[in-house]
Length: 303
Image (cartoon, rainbow, N blue to C red):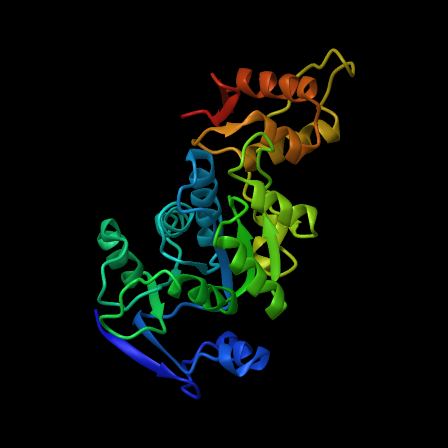
């Protein structure tokens, strides 16, 4: 795969990178190396912890796939955990993604991502401001984060602890006037402490692709399988379920895929009490839409 050096003024130069120089000259990006073909930008950055748990990685994969299917470019940092899951979710959905590296293009880092490197180059691009042979030194990754934010119209923080580097990407996004969103996480552990604080401090919650509809019109309509109404409902004397119940069911199915999702996250997203969620899940399970799993998890039924 060929590698190309782009400089400011090149017609292929990503316009968002020029915004960094307007913040301060020391943030300026004079040139970038590109491997692959740059897709449509700006995109949406999906970032989070390198040591993300299964739920965080599943969420990143789902978000990457949802955006990729809608033709929105997914931007991330090619790191382990959330970043890799977002890239892979986008690629699996047939979308295009941009990976911003903290080293030279010829350096295999992380080493287990060699295959992912080839996939991204074939269906998107890898981008770096560093020269061939530049190793992944620790200070280069926070600096790389400004490029992730600049190439994006919005940044979604999926799972981030209080000291996560993903929070620096969110700070760059705020400085650049980009939208900052965060996926709500459990308050019972430190894994989502940083992303939850973003929400407390004014970031928008991200629950599904429709939360980006004001920035990307292609995200306005969610493709959600219809929930078949029951023929008779004792609570309302028959006919179709109440409108609120249908809306909750459709929203739930948009949140849940084959990968399990915690009940508490679903309840928070839908604004339901545990008792109301239990009733809704029971009905959807009887209709064959979802599976209630041990440990308070829910997944879409396998057809």
